[in-house]
Amino acid sequence: MRRACLFALALLGGCATVPPSGKVATCPSTTQFSFVCGAMKPEDLAHIPDTPWVIASGFATGAGLKIIDSRTHRATLWFHGVAAQIARDPLYGDCAAPPDPALFTARGLSVRVVAPGEARLLVVNHGGREAIEVFAVDYRDPQARPQLRWQGCLAMPQGHVANSVASYGDGTVIATVLTRPGTSITDFVQGRVTGGVYERGPGEGAFRLLPGTELPGNNGLETARDDSGFYVIAFGLREVVAYARRDTAQPLWRVQAPEFMPDNIHWDGDRLLLAGMVRDEPACGGVRQIVNGVADGMTCHRGYAVAQLDPLTRRVSLVAHSAPDPVFNGVSAAVIVGRKLWLGSYQADRIAIRPLP
Image (tube, rainbow, N blue to C red; front, side):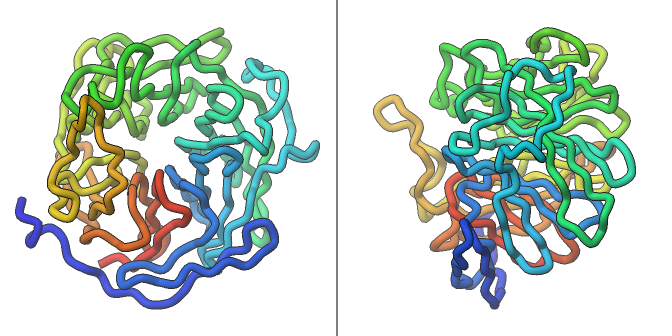
Protein backbone atom coordinates (compact mmCIF):
# COMPACT_ATOMS: atom_id res chain seq x y z
CA MET A 1 0.00 0.00 0.00
CA ARG A 2 1.39 3.36 -0.97
CA ARG A 3 2.34 5.75 1.80
CA ALA A 4 0.31 8.55 0.21
CA CYS A 5 -2.81 6.42 0.51
CA LEU A 6 -2.22 5.34 4.09
CA PHE A 7 -0.73 8.23 6.01
CA ALA A 8 -1.82 11.84 6.46
CA LEU A 9 -1.18 14.42 9.16
CA ALA A 10 -3.97 14.94 11.71
CA LEU A 11 -4.39 18.46 13.10
CA LEU A 12 -4.64 18.91 16.86
CA GLY A 13 -4.04 21.77 19.21
CA GLY A 14 -3.89 22.19 22.97
CA CYS A 15 -1.50 21.18 25.70
CA ALA A 16 -1.62 18.41 28.30
CA THR A 17 -0.15 18.64 31.78
CA VAL A 18 0.67 16.03 34.39
CA PRO A 19 2.20 16.27 37.88
CA PRO A 20 4.91 13.57 38.25
CA SER A 21 6.29 13.41 41.79
CA GLY A 22 4.31 16.49 42.77
CA LYS A 23 5.71 18.71 40.02
CA VAL A 24 3.70 19.98 37.08
CA ALA A 25 5.28 19.08 33.76
CA THR A 26 4.21 20.40 30.39
CA CYS A 27 4.48 18.74 27.01
CA PRO A 28 3.81 21.23 24.22
CA SER A 29 1.51 19.83 21.55
CA THR A 30 2.81 18.88 18.14
CA THR A 31 0.90 19.17 14.89
CA GLN A 32 -0.60 15.75 15.52
CA PHE A 33 -0.86 15.26 19.27
CA SER A 34 -1.48 16.62 22.71
CA PHE A 35 0.23 14.66 25.48
CA VAL A 36 0.04 13.25 28.96
CA CYS A 37 3.49 13.92 30.39
CA GLY A 38 5.55 11.88 32.81
CA ALA A 39 4.39 8.43 31.69
CA MET A 40 7.83 6.95 31.13
CA LYS A 41 7.69 4.34 28.34
CA PRO A 42 3.94 3.61 28.54
CA GLU A 43 4.31 0.38 26.56
CA ASP A 44 0.69 -0.68 27.15
CA LEU A 45 -2.57 1.07 28.01
CA ALA A 46 -5.85 -0.15 29.48
CA HIS A 47 -9.14 1.68 29.93
CA ILE A 48 -11.19 0.81 33.02
CA PRO A 49 -14.65 0.16 31.52
CA ASP A 50 -17.35 2.81 31.93
CA THR A 51 -15.01 5.21 33.73
CA PRO A 52 -12.77 8.14 32.73
CA TRP A 53 -9.70 6.29 34.01
CA VAL A 54 -6.82 4.97 31.91
CA ILE A 55 -3.98 2.76 33.19
CA ALA A 56 -0.49 3.03 31.70
CA SER A 57 2.41 0.65 32.21
CA GLY A 58 5.97 1.92 32.59
CA PHE A 59 8.60 -0.06 30.69
CA ALA A 60 11.52 1.47 32.59
CA THR A 61 13.02 0.77 36.01
CA GLY A 62 10.76 2.22 38.68
CA ALA A 63 8.22 3.59 36.16
CA GLY A 64 5.56 1.26 37.60
CA LEU A 65 1.88 1.95 36.95
CA LYS A 66 0.23 5.30 36.24
CA ILE A 67 -3.47 6.08 36.63
CA ILE A 68 -4.71 8.86 34.38
CA ASP A 69 -7.88 10.93 34.54
CA SER A 70 -8.90 11.28 30.91
CA ARG A 71 -10.89 14.44 31.72
CA THR A 72 -7.83 16.34 32.90
CA HIS A 73 -5.01 14.34 31.27
CA ARG A 74 -3.33 14.15 34.67
CA ALA A 75 -1.33 11.07 35.55
CA THR A 76 -0.16 9.93 38.96
CA LEU A 77 1.89 7.02 40.17
CA TRP A 78 -0.67 4.43 41.26
CA PHE A 79 1.17 1.69 43.16
CA HIS A 80 3.32 2.79 46.10
CA GLY A 81 3.59 -0.54 47.94
CA VAL A 82 2.04 0.78 51.16
CA ALA A 83 0.14 -1.53 53.51
CA ALA A 84 -3.25 -0.25 52.33
CA GLN A 85 -2.39 -1.47 48.82
CA ILE A 86 -1.68 -5.07 49.87
CA ALA A 87 -4.40 -7.75 50.03
CA ARG A 88 -2.79 -11.14 49.49
CA ASP A 89 -4.62 -13.96 47.75
CA PRO A 90 -3.19 -17.50 48.13
CA LEU A 91 -3.99 -18.20 44.45
CA TYR A 92 -1.06 -15.97 43.53
CA GLY A 93 1.52 -17.09 46.05
CA ASP A 94 4.77 -17.18 44.09
CA CYS A 95 6.15 -13.95 45.56
CA ALA A 96 6.81 -13.24 49.23
CA ALA A 97 6.44 -9.48 48.82
CA PRO A 98 4.89 -6.99 46.41
CA PRO A 99 7.01 -5.46 43.67
CA ASP A 100 9.50 -2.89 44.90
CA PRO A 101 8.22 0.48 43.61
CA ALA A 102 11.81 1.55 42.99
CA LEU A 103 12.26 -1.41 40.60
CA PHE A 104 8.74 -2.01 39.29
CA THR A 105 9.07 -2.22 35.49
CA ALA A 106 5.61 -2.73 34.02
CA ARG A 107 5.03 -3.90 30.46
CA GLY A 108 1.87 -5.68 29.26
CA LEU A 109 -1.50 -5.00 30.92
CA SER A 110 -4.80 -6.86 31.08
CA VAL A 111 -8.01 -5.73 32.79
CA ARG A 112 -10.89 -8.17 33.34
CA VAL A 113 -14.11 -7.14 35.09
CA VAL A 114 -14.95 -9.71 37.78
CA ALA A 115 -17.97 -7.99 39.40
CA PRO A 116 -19.76 -4.65 39.03
CA GLY A 117 -17.16 -1.99 39.77
CA GLU A 118 -14.40 -4.54 40.38
CA ALA A 119 -11.68 -5.83 38.08
CA ARG A 120 -8.54 -7.95 38.06
CA LEU A 121 -5.46 -6.21 36.67
CA LEU A 122 -2.58 -8.36 35.42
CA VAL A 123 0.78 -6.69 34.85
CA VAL A 124 3.95 -8.07 33.28
CA ASN A 125 6.81 -7.06 35.61
CA HIS A 126 10.54 -7.12 34.87
CA GLY A 127 11.66 -5.18 37.92
CA GLY A 128 13.48 -7.42 40.38
CA ARG A 129 11.72 -10.54 39.07
CA GLU A 130 10.08 -11.90 35.93
CA ALA A 131 6.47 -12.33 36.97
CA ILE A 132 2.84 -11.54 36.33
CA GLU A 133 1.73 -9.24 39.14
CA VAL A 134 -1.94 -9.54 40.11
CA PHE A 135 -3.94 -6.57 41.41
CA ALA A 136 -7.54 -6.02 42.47
CA VAL A 137 -9.09 -2.80 41.17
CA ASP A 138 -12.08 -1.27 42.96
CA TYR A 139 -13.90 1.43 40.99
CA ARG A 140 -17.35 1.19 42.59
CA ASP A 141 -17.25 4.82 43.72
CA PRO A 142 -17.74 6.89 40.54
CA GLN A 143 -16.55 10.04 42.31
CA ALA A 144 -13.23 8.63 43.49
CA ARG A 145 -10.04 7.46 41.89
CA PRO A 146 -10.04 3.64 41.59
CA GLN A 147 -8.34 1.78 44.42
CA LEU A 148 -5.51 -0.67 43.70
CA ARG A 149 -4.46 -3.64 45.85
CA TRP A 150 -1.68 -6.12 45.10
CA GLN A 151 -2.82 -9.74 45.57
CA GLY A 152 0.30 -11.68 44.62
CA CYS A 153 2.25 -12.83 41.61
CA LEU A 154 2.75 -15.73 39.22
CA ALA A 155 6.41 -16.33 38.40
CA MET A 156 7.48 -16.94 34.83
CA PRO A 157 9.57 -20.03 34.05
CA GLN A 158 13.28 -19.59 34.71
CA GLY A 159 14.92 -17.55 31.97
CA HIS A 160 11.62 -16.60 30.30
CA VAL A 161 10.62 -12.95 29.95
CA ALA A 162 6.91 -12.27 29.48
CA ASN A 163 5.69 -9.65 27.06
CA SER A 164 1.88 -9.56 27.18
CA VAL A 165 -0.74 -11.15 29.42
CA ALA A 166 -4.45 -12.00 29.34
CA SER A 167 -6.88 -14.19 31.26
CA TYR A 168 -10.03 -16.26 31.01
CA GLY A 169 -13.12 -15.93 33.16
CA ASP A 170 -12.15 -18.94 35.29
CA GLY A 171 -8.91 -17.23 36.34
CA THR A 172 -6.60 -19.04 33.93
CA VAL A 173 -3.74 -16.74 32.92
CA ILE A 174 -1.91 -16.81 29.61
CA ALA A 175 1.23 -14.87 28.71
CA THR A 176 3.46 -14.44 25.70
CA VAL A 177 7.22 -14.75 25.56
CA LEU A 178 8.72 -12.78 22.67
CA THR A 179 12.11 -14.52 22.64
CA ARG A 180 12.65 -17.77 24.48
CA PRO A 181 16.15 -18.55 25.80
CA GLY A 182 18.55 -19.05 22.91
CA THR A 183 16.62 -16.83 20.48
CA SER A 184 16.84 -13.13 19.66
CA ILE A 185 15.00 -10.17 18.15
CA THR A 186 17.11 -10.60 15.03
CA ASP A 187 15.72 -14.13 14.70
CA PHE A 188 12.07 -13.07 14.62
CA VAL A 189 12.77 -10.09 12.34
CA GLN A 190 14.12 -12.66 9.91
CA GLY A 191 11.00 -14.79 10.34
CA ARG A 192 12.36 -17.50 12.61
CA VAL A 193 10.35 -18.93 15.51
CA THR A 194 11.36 -17.38 18.83
CA GLY A 195 8.43 -17.23 21.23
CA GLY A 196 5.36 -18.95 22.57
CA VAL A 197 2.17 -18.64 24.59
CA TYR A 198 2.27 -19.99 28.16
CA GLU A 199 -0.72 -20.93 30.31
CA ARG A 200 -1.33 -21.39 34.02
CA GLY A 201 -4.65 -22.46 35.46
CA PRO A 202 -5.98 -21.62 38.96
CA GLY A 203 -4.10 -23.64 41.55
CA GLU A 204 -1.44 -24.85 39.11
CA GLY A 205 2.18 -24.51 40.18
CA ALA A 206 3.77 -23.18 37.00
CA PHE A 207 3.22 -21.87 33.50
CA ARG A 208 3.44 -24.38 30.65
CA LEU A 209 4.05 -23.80 26.95
CA LEU A 210 0.97 -24.32 24.78
CA PRO A 211 2.12 -26.58 21.93
CA GLY A 212 1.70 -25.09 18.47
CA THR A 213 1.87 -21.47 19.65
CA GLU A 214 5.55 -20.97 18.84
CA LEU A 215 5.76 -18.00 16.44
CA PRO A 216 8.28 -15.40 15.25
CA GLY A 217 8.02 -12.88 18.08
CA ASN A 218 4.92 -13.68 20.17
CA ASN A 219 3.79 -10.24 21.27
CA GLY A 220 0.30 -8.81 22.01
CA LEU A 221 -2.29 -11.17 23.47
CA GLU A 222 -6.04 -11.18 24.10
CA THR A 223 -8.62 -13.85 24.95
CA ALA A 224 -11.85 -14.39 23.00
CA ARG A 225 -14.99 -12.78 24.39
CA ASP A 226 -16.53 -16.21 25.00
CA ASP A 227 -13.30 -17.69 26.42
CA SER A 228 -13.12 -20.14 23.50
CA GLY A 229 -9.58 -19.19 22.58
CA PHE A 230 -7.13 -16.35 22.15
CA TYR A 231 -5.49 -14.01 19.66
CA VAL A 232 -1.73 -13.47 19.59
CA ILE A 233 0.41 -11.17 17.48
CA ALA A 234 3.37 -12.67 15.64
CA PHE A 235 5.46 -9.50 15.52
CA GLY A 236 7.98 -10.83 13.02
CA LEU A 237 5.20 -11.63 10.53
CA ARG A 238 2.85 -8.67 11.30
CA GLU A 239 0.10 -11.24 11.86
CA VAL A 240 -2.74 -11.75 14.28
CA VAL A 241 -3.00 -15.51 14.87
CA ALA A 242 -6.12 -17.07 16.41
CA TYR A 243 -6.13 -20.29 18.44
CA ALA A 244 -8.82 -22.46 20.01
CA ARG A 245 -8.41 -22.89 23.74
CA ARG A 246 -9.13 -26.64 23.67
CA ASP A 247 -6.45 -27.44 21.07
CA THR A 248 -3.56 -25.15 20.12
CA ALA A 249 -1.77 -27.58 17.85
CA GLN A 250 -2.76 -25.54 14.79
CA PRO A 251 -3.98 -21.94 14.45
CA LEU A 252 -7.61 -21.35 13.55
CA TRP A 253 -6.69 -18.49 11.21
CA ARG A 254 -4.15 -15.74 10.51
CA VAL A 255 -4.56 -12.14 9.37
CA GLN A 256 -1.70 -9.87 8.34
CA ALA A 257 -1.79 -6.18 9.25
CA PRO A 258 -1.61 -3.77 6.29
CA GLU A 259 1.77 -2.06 6.15
CA PHE A 260 2.30 -1.66 9.89
CA MET A 261 3.74 -3.75 12.71
CA PRO A 262 1.03 -4.39 15.33
CA ASP A 263 2.33 -4.69 18.89
CA ASN A 264 -0.38 -4.87 21.57
CA ILE A 265 -3.96 -6.00 20.97
CA HIS A 266 -7.04 -5.32 23.12
CA TRP A 267 -10.80 -5.35 22.78
CA ASP A 268 -12.66 -2.20 21.83
CA GLY A 269 -16.35 -3.14 21.84
CA ASP A 270 -16.74 -6.09 19.47
CA ARG A 271 -13.51 -5.35 17.60
CA LEU A 272 -9.87 -5.98 18.42
CA LEU A 273 -7.76 -2.82 18.43
CA LEU A 274 -4.18 -3.09 17.10
CA ALA A 275 -1.48 -0.42 17.14
CA GLY A 276 2.07 -0.22 15.92
CA MET A 277 4.70 1.46 13.79
CA VAL A 278 4.87 1.72 10.01
CA ARG A 279 6.63 -1.21 8.38
CA ASP A 280 8.20 0.61 5.42
CA GLU A 281 9.08 4.12 6.62
CA PRO A 282 10.87 6.29 4.02
CA ALA A 283 12.17 8.63 6.75
CA CYS A 284 14.02 5.65 8.24
CA GLY A 285 15.29 4.14 5.02
CA GLY A 286 12.42 1.70 4.59
CA VAL A 287 11.87 -1.54 6.47
CA ARG A 288 13.68 -2.61 9.63
CA GLN A 289 17.26 -3.55 8.83
CA ILE A 290 19.70 -6.12 10.16
CA VAL A 291 23.06 -4.41 10.63
CA ASN A 292 26.10 -6.56 11.44
CA GLY A 293 23.78 -9.38 12.42
CA VAL A 294 21.66 -7.27 14.80
CA ALA A 295 18.19 -5.86 14.21
CA ASP A 296 18.13 -2.07 14.44
CA GLY A 297 16.37 -0.61 17.49
CA MET A 298 13.88 1.43 15.44
CA THR A 299 14.80 4.63 17.25
CA CYS A 300 14.35 6.52 13.99
CA HIS A 301 10.87 8.04 14.19
CA ARG A 302 8.35 6.01 12.22
CA GLY A 303 4.76 6.72 11.36
CA TYR A 304 2.08 4.68 13.11
CA ALA A 305 -1.24 3.02 12.42
CA VAL A 306 -4.16 1.87 14.55
CA ALA A 307 -6.63 -0.64 13.14
CA GLN A 308 -9.65 -2.63 14.18
CA LEU A 309 -9.96 -6.34 13.46
CA ASP A 310 -13.36 -8.01 13.33
CA PRO A 311 -12.63 -11.59 14.48
CA LEU A 312 -15.82 -12.88 12.82
CA THR A 313 -15.17 -11.53 9.33
CA ARG A 314 -11.38 -11.20 9.80
CA ARG A 315 -11.58 -7.80 8.16
CA VAL A 316 -9.02 -5.16 9.16
CA SER A 317 -10.07 -1.50 8.98
CA LEU A 318 -7.82 1.47 9.69
CA VAL A 319 -8.84 3.75 12.56
CA ALA A 320 -6.03 6.30 12.38
CA HIS A 321 -2.59 6.66 10.81
CA SER A 322 0.02 9.31 10.29
CA ALA A 323 3.54 10.20 9.33
CA PRO A 324 6.34 10.38 11.95
CA ASP A 325 5.97 12.80 14.86
CA PRO A 326 9.07 14.74 15.99
CA VAL A 327 8.73 13.90 19.71
CA PHE A 328 6.72 10.67 19.84
CA ASN A 329 7.97 7.34 18.51
CA GLY A 330 7.63 3.63 19.20
CA VAL A 331 3.82 3.35 19.11
CA SER A 332 2.90 0.07 20.80
CA ALA A 333 -0.66 0.34 22.15
CA ALA A 334 -3.95 2.17 21.72
CA VAL A 335 -7.21 2.69 23.57
CA ILE A 336 -10.23 4.75 22.59
CA VAL A 337 -11.81 6.95 25.28
CA GLY A 338 -14.86 8.80 24.06
CA ARG A 339 -13.89 10.40 20.76
CA LYS A 340 -10.17 10.44 21.55
CA LEU A 341 -7.47 7.98 20.57
CA TRP A 342 -4.76 7.39 23.18
CA LEU A 343 -1.41 5.97 22.07
CA GLY A 344 1.18 4.21 24.21
CA SER A 345 4.86 3.83 23.37
CA TYR A 346 7.73 1.60 24.45
CA GLN A 347 10.17 4.46 23.74
CA ALA A 348 8.53 7.78 24.63
CA ASP A 349 8.24 9.65 27.94
CA ARG A 350 4.58 10.49 27.36
CA ILE A 351 1.21 9.29 26.08
CA ALA A 352 -0.10 10.81 22.86
CA ILE A 353 -3.73 11.84 22.36
CA ARG A 354 -5.55 12.83 19.20
CA PRO A 355 -9.19 13.03 18.14
CA LEU A 356 -10.57 10.17 16.10
CA PRO A 357 -10.83 10.98 12.40
